[in-house]
Image 1: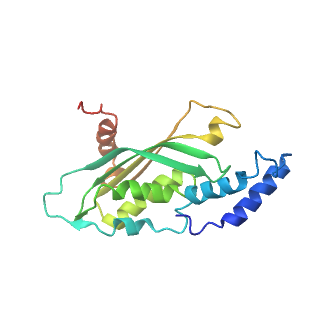
Image 2 (image 1 turned 120 degrees about the vertical axis):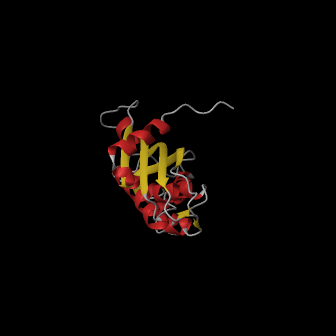
Image 3 (image 1 turned 45 degrees about the vertical axis):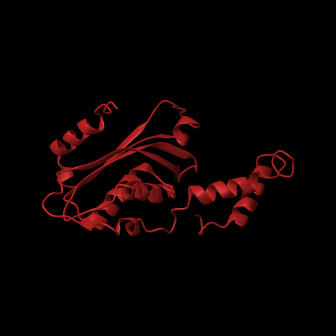
Length: 194
Protein backbone atom coordinates (compact mmCIF):
# COMPACT_ATOMS: atom_id res chain seq x y z
CA UNK A 1 0.00 0.00 0.00
CA UNK A 2 1.26 3.44 -0.91
CA UNK A 3 4.48 2.36 -2.67
CA UNK A 4 4.35 5.50 -4.81
CA UNK A 5 4.05 7.76 -1.77
CA UNK A 6 7.18 9.44 -0.38
CA UNK A 7 6.35 9.56 3.35
CA UNK A 8 9.41 11.64 4.25
CA UNK A 9 8.50 14.38 1.77
CA UNK A 10 4.90 14.40 2.99
CA UNK A 11 6.02 14.67 6.62
CA UNK A 12 8.35 17.57 5.72
CA UNK A 13 5.54 19.32 3.82
CA UNK A 14 3.10 18.88 6.73
CA UNK A 15 5.70 20.26 9.12
CA UNK A 16 6.05 23.29 6.86
CA UNK A 17 2.27 23.63 6.63
CA UNK A 18 1.91 23.56 10.42
CA UNK A 19 4.50 26.32 10.69
CA UNK A 20 2.80 28.30 7.91
CA UNK A 21 -0.51 28.38 9.80
CA UNK A 22 1.26 29.63 12.92
CA UNK A 23 1.50 26.37 14.88
CA UNK A 24 4.67 24.97 16.38
CA UNK A 25 5.37 21.62 14.64
CA UNK A 26 7.81 20.74 17.44
CA UNK A 27 5.22 21.06 20.21
CA UNK A 28 4.41 17.81 22.04
CA UNK A 29 0.89 17.87 20.59
CA UNK A 30 2.04 18.18 16.96
CA UNK A 31 5.45 16.48 16.88
CA UNK A 32 4.05 13.18 15.52
CA UNK A 33 1.40 14.74 13.29
CA UNK A 34 3.55 14.95 10.12
CA UNK A 35 4.25 11.22 10.25
CA UNK A 36 0.61 10.33 10.98
CA UNK A 37 -0.48 12.46 8.01
CA UNK A 38 2.13 10.75 5.81
CA UNK A 39 0.78 7.32 6.79
CA UNK A 40 -2.79 8.48 6.15
CA UNK A 41 -1.87 9.87 2.73
CA UNK A 42 -0.14 6.61 1.82
CA UNK A 43 -3.48 4.91 2.45
CA UNK A 44 -5.66 7.62 0.85
CA UNK A 45 -3.60 7.66 -2.35
CA UNK A 46 -2.65 3.98 -2.63
CA UNK A 47 -4.47 3.76 -5.99
CA UNK A 48 -2.05 6.14 -7.72
CA UNK A 49 -0.25 4.15 -10.41
CA UNK A 50 -2.43 1.05 -9.90
CA UNK A 51 -4.22 -0.52 -12.88
CA UNK A 52 -7.82 -1.43 -12.00
CA UNK A 53 -8.03 -3.78 -14.99
CA UNK A 54 -5.75 -6.21 -13.18
CA UNK A 55 -8.59 -6.70 -10.70
CA UNK A 56 -10.88 -7.84 -13.51
CA UNK A 57 -8.37 -10.20 -15.16
CA UNK A 58 -9.86 -13.32 -13.57
CA UNK A 59 -13.23 -12.84 -15.28
CA UNK A 60 -14.70 -16.16 -16.27
CA UNK A 61 -16.49 -16.99 -19.50
CA UNK A 62 -20.16 -17.84 -19.20
CA UNK A 63 -22.67 -19.30 -21.59
CA UNK A 64 -26.19 -18.20 -22.33
CA UNK A 65 -27.18 -18.35 -18.64
CA UNK A 66 -25.54 -15.10 -17.53
CA UNK A 67 -28.75 -13.45 -16.40
CA UNK A 68 -29.81 -10.01 -17.46
CA UNK A 69 -28.29 -7.87 -14.74
CA UNK A 70 -25.63 -7.84 -12.06
CA UNK A 71 -26.20 -5.05 -9.54
CA UNK A 72 -24.06 -4.38 -6.51
CA UNK A 73 -25.39 -1.56 -4.41
CA UNK A 74 -24.13 0.33 -1.41
CA UNK A 75 -20.41 -0.13 -2.00
CA UNK A 76 -18.76 2.15 0.55
CA UNK A 77 -16.80 4.89 -1.19
CA UNK A 78 -14.06 7.14 0.19
CA UNK A 79 -11.89 9.45 -1.87
CA UNK A 80 -10.09 12.77 -1.67
CA UNK A 81 -11.14 15.74 -3.79
CA UNK A 82 -8.28 16.95 -5.93
CA UNK A 83 -9.34 20.59 -5.57
CA UNK A 84 -8.90 21.01 -1.80
CA UNK A 85 -7.50 17.61 -0.71
CA UNK A 86 -10.56 17.13 1.48
CA UNK A 87 -12.38 13.80 1.71
CA UNK A 88 -15.61 12.84 0.05
CA UNK A 89 -17.58 9.81 1.18
CA UNK A 90 -20.60 7.95 0.00
CA UNK A 91 -21.81 4.91 -1.84
CA UNK A 92 -21.37 3.43 -5.28
CA UNK A 93 -24.03 1.39 -7.04
CA UNK A 94 -22.67 -0.60 -9.97
CA UNK A 95 -24.73 -2.48 -12.54
CA UNK A 96 -23.63 -4.38 -15.61
CA UNK A 97 -25.33 -6.59 -18.17
CA UNK A 98 -22.91 -9.45 -18.77
CA UNK A 99 -21.55 -10.17 -22.20
CA UNK A 100 -19.37 -13.27 -22.43
CA UNK A 101 -17.69 -12.89 -19.02
CA UNK A 102 -18.50 -12.24 -15.39
CA UNK A 103 -16.19 -11.45 -12.52
CA UNK A 104 -16.18 -12.41 -8.86
CA UNK A 105 -18.25 -9.92 -6.91
CA UNK A 106 -15.36 -8.83 -4.68
CA UNK A 107 -13.58 -7.44 -7.76
CA UNK A 108 -16.15 -4.68 -8.20
CA UNK A 109 -15.55 -2.96 -4.83
CA UNK A 110 -11.82 -3.39 -5.38
CA UNK A 111 -12.06 -1.49 -8.68
CA UNK A 112 -13.99 1.27 -6.88
CA UNK A 113 -11.41 1.39 -4.06
CA UNK A 114 -8.44 1.49 -6.44
CA UNK A 115 -9.82 4.31 -8.56
CA UNK A 116 -11.06 6.25 -5.52
CA UNK A 117 -7.64 6.01 -3.82
CA UNK A 118 -6.12 8.86 -5.78
CA UNK A 119 -6.83 12.59 -6.03
CA UNK A 120 -10.24 12.62 -7.70
CA UNK A 121 -13.40 14.40 -8.65
CA UNK A 122 -16.62 12.44 -8.35
CA UNK A 123 -17.63 12.97 -11.96
CA UNK A 124 -14.38 11.52 -13.30
CA UNK A 125 -14.40 8.68 -10.78
CA UNK A 126 -17.75 7.37 -12.03
CA UNK A 127 -16.55 7.54 -15.63
CA UNK A 128 -13.30 5.73 -14.74
CA UNK A 129 -15.19 2.93 -12.99
CA UNK A 130 -17.53 2.52 -15.96
CA UNK A 131 -14.58 2.53 -18.38
CA UNK A 132 -12.68 -0.09 -16.36
CA UNK A 133 -15.69 -2.41 -16.29
CA UNK A 134 -16.30 -1.88 -20.00
CA UNK A 135 -12.68 -2.64 -20.89
CA UNK A 136 -12.24 -5.47 -18.40
CA UNK A 137 -15.51 -7.34 -18.93
CA UNK A 138 -16.92 -6.23 -22.31
CA UNK A 139 -20.46 -6.17 -20.92
CA UNK A 140 -23.50 -5.19 -22.96
CA UNK A 141 -24.13 -2.31 -20.55
CA UNK A 142 -22.64 -0.59 -17.49
CA UNK A 143 -24.20 1.89 -15.09
CA UNK A 144 -22.30 3.55 -12.25
CA UNK A 145 -24.21 5.70 -9.76
CA UNK A 146 -22.18 7.52 -7.11
CA UNK A 147 -23.73 9.34 -4.15
CA UNK A 148 -21.32 11.29 -1.98
CA UNK A 149 -20.94 14.10 0.54
CA UNK A 150 -17.95 16.34 0.00
CA UNK A 151 -15.78 17.93 2.66
CA UNK A 152 -15.08 20.88 0.36
CA UNK A 153 -18.82 21.63 0.24
CA UNK A 154 -19.66 20.72 3.85
CA UNK A 155 -16.71 22.18 5.75
CA UNK A 156 -15.67 25.27 3.79
CA UNK A 157 -17.15 27.77 1.38
CA UNK A 158 -20.93 27.30 1.28
CA UNK A 159 -20.88 24.87 4.24
CA UNK A 160 -23.73 22.69 3.06
CA UNK A 161 -23.18 19.78 5.44
CA UNK A 162 -26.42 18.00 4.53
CA UNK A 163 -25.98 18.08 0.75
CA UNK A 164 -24.98 15.14 -1.37
CA UNK A 165 -23.94 14.84 -4.98
CA UNK A 166 -25.22 12.11 -7.34
CA UNK A 167 -23.40 11.33 -10.57
CA UNK A 168 -24.22 8.77 -13.24
CA UNK A 169 -21.94 7.17 -15.82
CA UNK A 170 -23.50 4.87 -18.40
CA UNK A 171 -22.25 2.72 -21.25
CA UNK A 172 -23.87 0.45 -23.83
CA UNK A 173 -27.44 -0.74 -23.15
CA UNK A 174 -27.60 1.33 -19.96
CA UNK A 175 -27.19 4.64 -21.77
CA UNK A 176 -30.93 4.30 -22.45
CA UNK A 177 -33.14 6.28 -20.02
CA UNK A 178 -35.71 3.47 -19.65
CA UNK A 179 -32.97 0.97 -18.79
CA UNK A 180 -31.56 3.40 -16.24
CA UNK A 181 -34.98 3.94 -14.65
CA UNK A 182 -35.37 0.19 -14.07
CA UNK A 183 -31.96 0.01 -12.40
CA UNK A 184 -32.65 3.12 -10.28
CA UNK A 185 -35.78 1.42 -8.95
CA UNK A 186 -33.67 -1.60 -7.91
CA UNK A 187 -31.06 0.64 -6.29
CA UNK A 188 -33.78 2.32 -4.25
CA UNK A 189 -35.70 -0.87 -3.41
CA UNK A 190 -35.84 -1.75 0.29
CA UNK A 191 -33.35 -4.24 1.65
CA UNK A 192 -34.71 -7.79 1.89
CA UNK A 193 -35.75 -8.81 5.40
CA UNK A 194 -33.51 -11.42 7.00
